[in-house]
Image 1 (cartoon, one colour):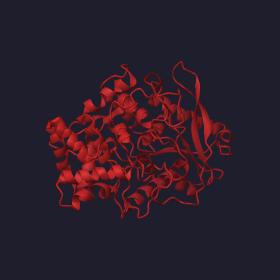
Image 2: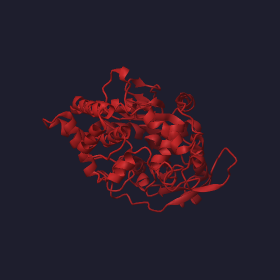
Image 3: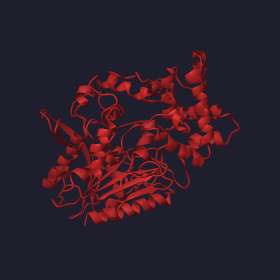
Image 4: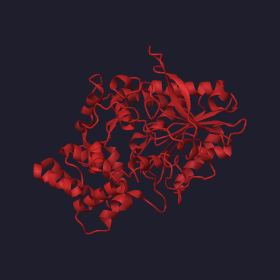
Amino acid sequence: MRVATFLACFAGAAVGCLDGRDATIPASATPYWFPQPVDHFGSNNATWQQQYFVNATFYKPGGPIYVHTPGEQSLTTRFVDGTHPTDLAQTTNALVVAIEHRFFGKSNPIPDLSGSSLQYLTIENALEDFASFVRSAKSHPSDVFRTAVSKNAKVVFFGGSYSGNVAAWMRAKYPRLIQGAWASSAMLYGRLDYYQFDQSFGQHLQALGCAEKFSQAIEAVDDVLVSGSAADVVALQAKLGVPQLTPQDTAGLLSGLSTLYSMAPVTTAKDFVYDNVCSFFNNSSLAPIDAYARAIKAVISSDGMTEQSLRQMGDTSYGLDNYAIDQPGRSWYYMGCTWFGNWQTAPPSSSGLSRYRSQLVNLSYFEPNCQRKFGSNVAIPVDVSAYNAKWFNTLRGVSNIYYTSGSLDIWRDATVATSTGNLLPSSPSSPVFTIDGATHSQDLGEKQVNELASVTKARTIGDALVVKWIK
């Protein structure tokens, strides 16, 4: 399965994923377009067209509007036809609309992704795009939805991963427009060094019995990449089946490959991390580095990766001047550089923590590309303290937000429900729920065969809250 398709499945974006989609839900294949200004708060009043899809299959007069966005992905019909909000729409008579985020997919205020164009990729502009859409939908629903919808319809915003940020912020910033928000695995708290990413991955490996051997394999990799000769590095790259890149780029590529399945949903019958990582360590007498090599090669083979695609994934100099639209990774990188950081680094050596990626994957791996890709106007390092002061603190005391996170979610420690405690208090109006044994945004994705009981419980709690909000 291709990487992009595989990962999109678990955010509800791709066709033909794992399993539990209700085949009776018709596809909503017609794209619509909504005009937006390039800059809501500045002098550039030129307009562009924002793409959206509508599913009114289950709507009945008086029903609510469920808004969804793919966030850092391109929009597909899956966001109105194959995620939990659509399931909920069937029992609450709701209309479901999914709106593409600016500078992703086909929704581009300016038709390139250069640094000068991406200056308009701000949180304020993104939120006002959605607010403007909802205002128009409520004042002229027939024009927006091509069907009669009550102007008094209640609106609930749903989002998983970064789009969970959007959902929570929309409720906080526009409480009169948005009656409630379901923020699943929302990465709301910014950190410069987000080494907790791999610590969460390590907890998953530990639960499956291969954490120690995996960490030993990383130490063996670093013995070569950090201290080995040039010939040793080339030999290691050949052993692992990856191209000849710099040691640091090789380390980054290996980190991406080994954690590729970490966001896949866990069910009572299947765990992709076990199948694609731990099975190579647990069912073998191989040395850790040899088991690691088999795991890496298996990922490359199962995804059909070529040397070119591996170079594209690992080479930090690749595509620096490629400004073409519909490069989600480029737009997302800009957001990391200018908004919240969360660079997925190895833990500092002084921490005493086990490592599940090379020590070469540090800030020097990520930060220089901010200016190389987007220009010298991008400040290094990103000011995560200012980001948190403005955008995390705006959520304090806000009602009608449901925060969820999986206990095995690699992004858990950037969410409200961290592994060391909640960053915001859980309350009856804005509960915080940790989904035991789950990974990233499982509660808002497609229903899986052999679903975890904890995921079912998270959905039951969320559904009851939404029903309360839309009364």
